[in-house]
Image 1: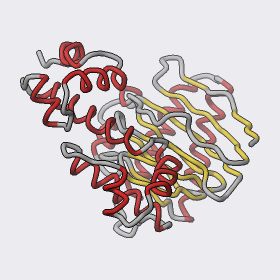
Image 2: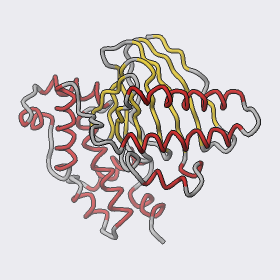
Image 3: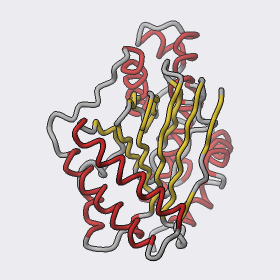
Image 4: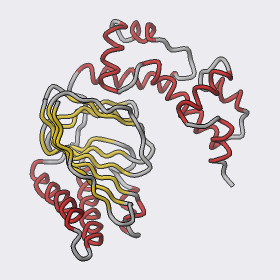
Length: 281
């Protein structure tokens, strides 16, 4: 595998970042992760598999992947070896009001892959590459120019995302199958779920399911189940006064010690510490 990773450029306030990358050969993101900022992933060349909140998308040339803050995601190579992309991260605070209201509209309400019509691709690419150039060169008022370019890009993405024929159905049968399996996990996380059970339910051998699931999501099946349970526990810790023991049982943990250990490994702190950090005053 060979990479040509361009420098990551940021604005002075660190609320906007942009980076270009060219890559040849197979690769997978070291760990699925989340951001506190919005992520725009625009594919200039090639093909890339994106896994976002339980859904598998195949991004192709001209596609824009939108990841909203807090959504778990990862990427992996497809059968197309050469990939070139531009990655943009921005905090909503970088966009002034009232323009920030566009982030409360489609397609920014949930993470998704946006099929950009061919006639729109050149203009979108120009906007993105102009932002990259401005970040590189730091000319007078470059941050203001980047802000205006980003606002224009977001408005165009909103208009494209509002089109009814913007289809993002999985193109590969196994991509669809993995999306169905993750949907099942999201619906049944409080129950006992095993690799063997999923294998039987979805008519796939355990070894093949394990291998494909890891390739497309970056997670082992059992690990993904634990992540979903912890994320649901986090939600309950933030929004309810339920006892930690009750929450552990509700999200599928039989033993409080196992819950505490798993929660700390995923969250970096204990359930009690998490609740104190996120309690609503």
